[in-house]
Image (cartoon, rainbow, N blue to C red; front, side, top):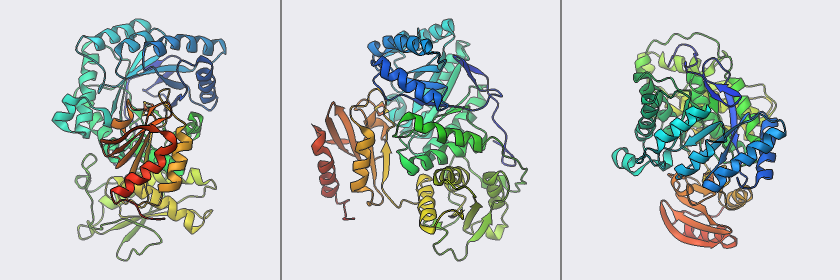
Length: 496
Ligand code: SF4
């Protein structure tokens, strides 16, 4: 990673159907369907909407062999409609579904945390992929590490890297190079550290596989966009990332403009910045520079802070260099970082500011944020600044929702449900509420949520306190009231 200028990490090219990622190729944007994979027409219609919105790689869940088989019908109908979208099968738990899907799709994603390896399933899949020219994604999720890895490392970035490297070494040993790798988490600090450590680990072992970036369960609205922009932006600013997915709990085609905006925002990062004290920076171990307990937004008191304003085309590197170059006497002086934006769309402003300034907060370098945007009023700016601080995990001012983007496994209308849950609980400070579509992956992937609302079957919900099931399989009509009762029973409730 270069501190003094922007440079994209060199990776090998990987072909996914008609799309090639890695090497000198532009960063590709992608999404995932949330239709039932057995519903051919609905799935194809959604893939076509995503494609028209700019997503040329689309993933579908194949939770079982029946869904795996139906990918054939989906690909056939899509091609007959003259769409050449690259199709990816998302596999958890059932290697047989991967073996079937690999006959029809352009890429298969497996999760090392729940993919069987004891009977040579991975080697078999690699051979199958090689024969048909299918790419493979080793997709690690923070919330679903294998028990063996979890027992040794806990749910840490180190555990995520160990999990990925085991599978990558098998690919390398079999001389199979059409591999992409991802390290997703809903916790931006964990996610960014995991990707940076992964790059270091791959470099040590001579691997140059391209990287798929994403923050899982980012939620919806401006907040979901900001959370994705902080995590993905921090890595794009490092030059890491060959394809990205912005996961939103919304229609998947809504993800495309946000993903495109991020890619365009990092296309050019001009400038050279002298860094006198690189040893003050720790990209993989979080360390706060100053002793400020709670970072501030610009309208709050910041006496004694240094104000550093970015004026170049690479604000993240420019501000980082300025902070690292402070005189020794000022090396722990709190810093407020500022950047001016002339955008007139609130969403564009939020994504750009989160991607530029969020990484410096996430890395513990800055202590305050000033988004200077004349087109917006003070309350709007303050909201965005607070959301960036929360997405960077340095100050929690409102409830955090760890909401899955939904997929073919989702068992209820998650977008509507999330809106209802938000309307009743968003005033609760310092709480994390998981809203997950299915019981198979949901409980693990909501990871560090305080409370969980998880689809247990059609129209049925299971409620969690932390990782413990409290109320199982209740009708959805009762679930929100029961969730509020649960929050009250644990003393975490107050009236709005
Ligand atoms: S948690 Fe959500 S996105 Fe993940 S598999 Fe379940 S329904 Fe799909």
